[in-house]
Amino acid sequence: MSTAQSLHQSRKRKNAVMMALCVIAAGIGLAWLALILGALLYKGLSGVSLAVFTQMTPPPGDAGGLLNAIYGSIVMTIIGIVVGTPIGVLAGTYMAEYGRFSKLTTVVRFINDILLSAPSIIVGLFVYELMVRPMGHFSAIAGAVALSILVIPVVVRTTEDMLNLVPNALREAGTAIGAPRWVVIRSVAYRAALSGIVTGILLAIARISGETAPLLFTALNNQFWSSNLNAPMASLPVTIFQFALSPYEEWQQLAWTGALIITLTVLGLSIIARSLTGRREDR
Amino acid sequence: MSAVSEAATSPAMRTREATVRRFAFTDMVFRAATRASAILVLVLLGGVAISLIAGSWEALSKFGISFLTTESWNPVTENFGALAPIYGTIVTSAIAIIIAVPIGIGIAVFLTELCPRPLRRPIGIAVELLAGIPSIIYGIWGLFVFAPFLQTTIQPFIIWLFKGIPGLNSLFAGPPYGIGLLTSSLILAIMVLPFITSITKDVFDTVPAVLKESAYGIGCTTWEVTRRVTIPYTRVGIMGGVMLGLGRALGETMAVTFVIGNAHRISASLFAPGTTISATIANEFTEADGAIYTSSLVALGLILFIITFIILALARYMLLRIDSRTGA
Image 1 (cartoon, rainbow over the protein chains, first blue to last red):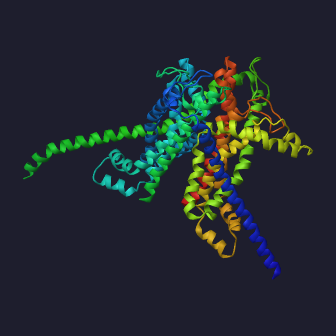
Image 2 (cartoon, rainbow over the protein chains, first blue to last red):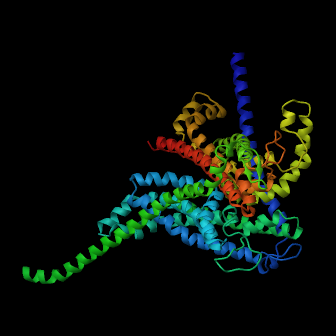
Image 3 (cartoon, helix red, strand yellow):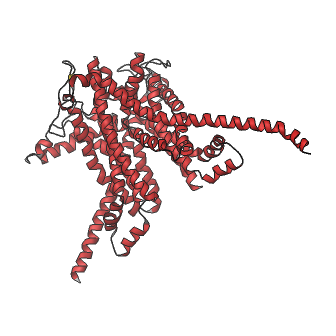
């Protein structure tokens, strides 16, 4: 009886210890998020001013802003999304609609999942070999292409997943009234999966707006205002990289402020994306 | 009667046929467009492989297999070897995984078994938000906040603690720079934690309630259910999540570039600066002059591509296996 009791006690103790460790693990995870966001807010907020959004990146030792970097980031992100989204949506459509059971879909899904987590610096090297080397110079358009390559796998994945969730009865109803396949896809499947597909696009924007590695040797950087897509263009992440590693205090401050802007943008986009799918689940 | 109906339907029939033909044509075009896009995904990966092989050909044909086994990285004499970056990449990723896996599984257990229901979703979302933070943010935080903290508090303490212990004293030998292999590993651990956590939590949710309830029914504690039922049932899925995290850690660029120190040498001490494949490429590519220098950097990229491809393929294979089991 007493051995049974002590065994029971030791099992309970072990359980309490392991569960306490799990709680601590969760605490560590949350504390880290709080630490990083806290440091960002603390260091970044002190540098936020109107000048950040209205002035160009300064030469070393001067005050200035991030206007050209913000502009470059927005331009390259928009081009990346505009190029990458249609390809991603169409590929996802093939996988979920026309070729749902084909061999090609299985292979594409596997390769796409690998592209999804492939190191982004490899994509940078690819676009360097593909565009920068033949053209002979760095350019914003090369940076945008690199970003679009990162957009494609995200959009493919969410589009396929969301279209697969559309009930077949809806498609059959469309086909039964004589609509051809692509009209059914366009006006039934896309409409039913719209919020999911938009979520995928938002997640893709969130992903590429913070990407640095693929821009380092495609779009490079630019100290000055430039809207020429065929010339190097500044971007927020690359500017942060350059400024943070510099010895100048003004530059480091701008790097923190830029980091805060990117983080808030990315977190905002992720939260919007999440609330879109959240609503869909409730329905 | 029939003549009337013929006269009435015949033009209608014709437009109907034209419409059907037009629909068939647009459908074919749309189908071809979607198929071409799907194939483009394959072409992209193939293009990456081909361009990396083409770009690294010059270096690989000059150095041959010794590229993989040479530590020296000398742009002046144009003698390049990948051993130090490969070593740095593998060591930092391995340490990161060793730290992140127990914590990730712990959080997943917390979220599935212990967490009060109203808190479950917010905490899960918070952990996933960590995954969304761009790596450059981890980098700047690591460089300005985390590294100085390690340099002034943790590292001197560990050096003092292990001073007299053989083996450990060379593994944790000073001076405390703050930046270095261990700092990079810790940052990487923070970065892969959300991936491991969210996948582990997802596969934990696939365990049939009946299995867990029967274990609870014979009097098992929560830990025993986790250890004997949940984890064995989801082992393949957890491994897949770990491999996915490993793939991320191996290829992570910006966060590591900030805090690794970019030193092309292999040191016994984890506190010493080192380098990884991706950090070397990020730091040196735009400054590389000379075809052989650039080509060597692309060759590093090719090595990274091959390593991560294998790891990610294994991860996907494992996650597919658990998917097919829950599907069946």
